[in-house]
Image (tube, rainbow, N blue to C red; front, side, top):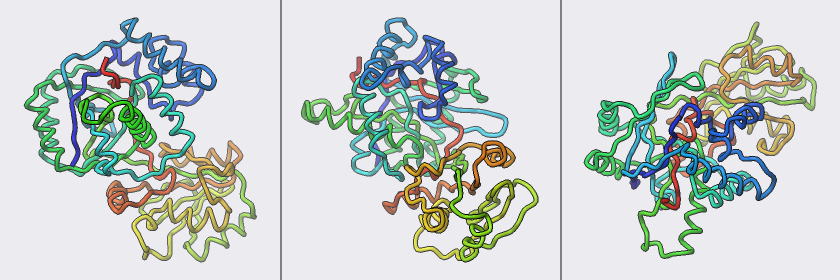
Length: 400
């Protein structure tokens, strides 16, 4: 159900030096350190400046990379296999173009609402720079035939093989038109689900709409801007970590808060920091003390309502703490990617917050069910880990 295409992208000469984490997880300290290196992608994805100057500097950064031969153009249409390896987790998938018409037709399924401000930012960025540098991470339901093709591509020598951010990164390039056609045929019967990168996908769709206004759609159906730069992996290759919540200040006492939970949760006092072991079980650190919350009623009207992030929002954050919109409320913030509960505890004991809520991670199958039903996940429901690098492949939307 989706149309895919090979790419003729720009790729870095030195990927270890050039590539970075996605722009939206780079902390300010790391950003400043990266900007000391003129050959880093950071100058494209998080450029200096104020207002529109930011986007103009992104375009200048991209132009500079080409002029100074920091990146080079691949002239043969290619699909890539990208693999990340570590001692405790490995995953892999395909880097390729996926039709933005399929995005409009919901064959590329979304599970989150986009927000106006970050969407406007990413749209301005892509319209001014005319390049997509960050991958939109999507998944397909496990397909043995696709996985066989991926393994066949991996028999070649990798184009890139380097270590960064605690992972070994490998990239294989496939130019054989027969193998690419095989993948095209296989994906014609697949639906894919956006895992990470909803704003990048939406901004690419906005770019395409602007181009369609300039010219007839059938004039250039294979133009680069018709396709979304995507990393597409089997759902069995996915690791989701919890996206935890931190409440800065409770509007009531600890005892009042615990009493207010009793109607919906069994509350068990714990001796030390811990992670929840299953769905519908939460771990909280309240003023330095740990409690296990077990959901009492587990019959739900929908799959969305069964998610722990939804239960937390519907039964705790909004009715008890008056946090109606967690995306805008200043009394809450989110922590993703941390697995050690002792590190979570420091948000209370060392950083002065009142409540840390440690959630059990969302299952990818639940995400697919909700997305298929046209549902929307609560904000900040999933932290996909590890993050795929930006800059391995740069998709020039003008085809230059």
